[in-house]
Image (cartoon, rainbow, N blue to C red; front, top):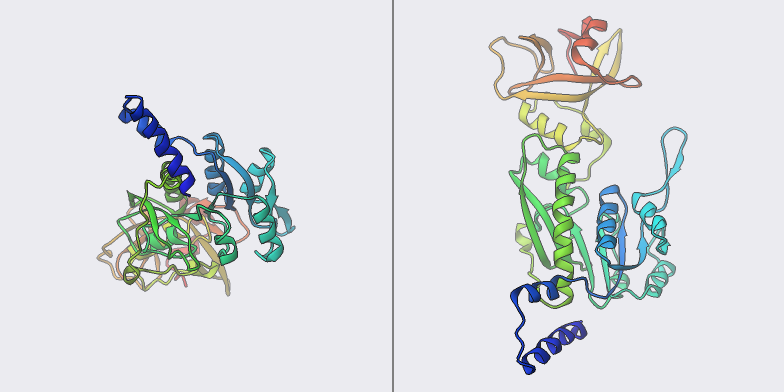
Length: 349
């Protein structure tokens, strides 16, 4: 790490000896220009692939990519490769897809001889043997304002909690779960209409710029890592498919936050009793109002309110706008009711 630091300062010293001065613009360029380092990238989903593309466009020498193995998807169990893998193949970068970061995988990563490893939603905790490989360490791109929301689903958890702001953290990795020292952070307000997908787009766009700014500053020793306040830490709950099942005793706003957090996956749903059976009804698009109507309704009851179709909650009303029966296509609620008039007055479970 000291080699880059000394090289930069020898250049500055030489200028001073020749009576030259480094302008603020030149200093900024010399700090933020792409350092000549060997970089390994570890990530899996599409947003991570965008980060990898950004690093390549800036001219970083990416000597290896590590991503999750191809996975079977859908009823036909078709093998699907990660977006990060596609970028690596397009740019002909050496690729590693280990089931586990075992001794063989670690040996391959060592063979890449990385100076820095950048991790963004890779999906596995890195063992000490990997963390100790690069001279500049392993840095992680995390979509929360650490120490808040450590874990694998920080965006969903920030929305579920009704947070007013969130952000991106670039941190130096250690053996813990998102417990390493902070290198840089950026904040962003959390809009009431933000779903997990929309907020992910915003955060990865924000974080892409932050990552590009942070790497040269870190390599050239212009950043002093900051310890996290572990007493302020919060942990993410694991998001599972059944978390989308709505409890109609909850407040309308909490249900709406659950809808935002679980869009696009796994989505929210309830069960509708029809013809003696329970049908799974996905609530594709909803809105809400905080106050209940003046007319008394049972929890989960579906009723007309003006030109809208509402569902009674513990406090407030959820408005159904688009729904989908399992195995069917999504449809606007008005069209759905035309073919399912018994929905009005029924209770969702």
